[in-house]
Length: 253
Ligand SMILES: NC(=O)c1ccc[n+]([C@@H]2O[C@H](COP(=O)([O-])OP(=O)(O)OC[C@H]3O[C@@H](n4cnc5c(N)ncnc54)[C@H](OP(=O)(O)O)[C@@H]3O)[C@@H](O)[C@H]2O)c1
Image (cartoon, rainbow, N blue to C red; front, side, top):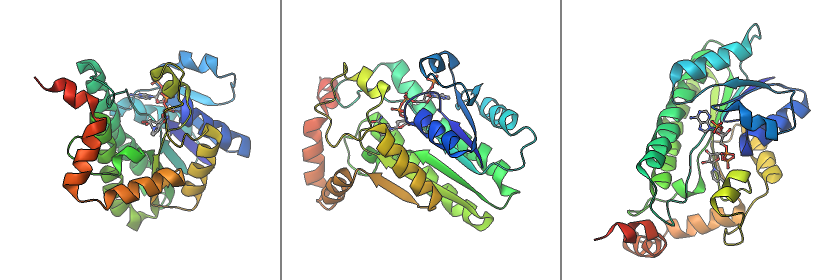
């Protein structure tokens, strides 16, 4: 199989790339800065420098990877931008990057993959959203709102691409123990509930793609917590979530 992973140079994307490579698949990955790859002591992946916010850039990377290969079997978009925007304020630049990567980047990835897969009449596309995007409440952070958009965008592409035999799987993970998450939390993840290790995440994600699942929320405890919260009346949910939204309190005069 030919597998391309946008945002495959570190974290969840990189771990997925290793998984498919070790299974014997042909794997291409991309990121904006390939220098980070040097930390990942694994040179057998075909790596391309590309930015998902630039549609020509991501399309060129996937075309270079495919070269004379016949089909694009799996396209996974792991490229995402996140910051600790529940705990505090983020800068304009961080907000801009989050909006661009998580919304525009998601659309660019879907567009690139669907153009290649439409003629094949088969293929699987997956995107990493976040469990935080499952709930709908007033004072959610910008990250949460962008990931909620990712879930909606994926729903729209799933509906549109179904007649062409292309499946769309949305992944909504809780906290996954990656270097990026550790960097954002001064290497202290003990307050992150239901933390999942990256190998477990890879196994859940790859199985969901193989089974053409629509939406996968993990870990199970986080999923049931979100499901329970979603049953609450909106005023109560808003009140509970406001307690967490320190960024919002800081915004008030
Ligand atoms: N870790 C968690 O707890 C968690 C939980 C829920 C959801 N997620 C989501 O899972 C995804 C991966 O998270 P992670 O923890 O593995 O983060 P990560 O290690 O920072 O991985 C992000 C990857 O995306 C690439 N990337 C970022 N912006 C890009 C752009 N504009 N164009 C191309 N590539 C880009 C990064 O490489 P470059 O920076 O070099 O471009 C990197 O390869 C994200 O979408 C995140 O929101 C993570």
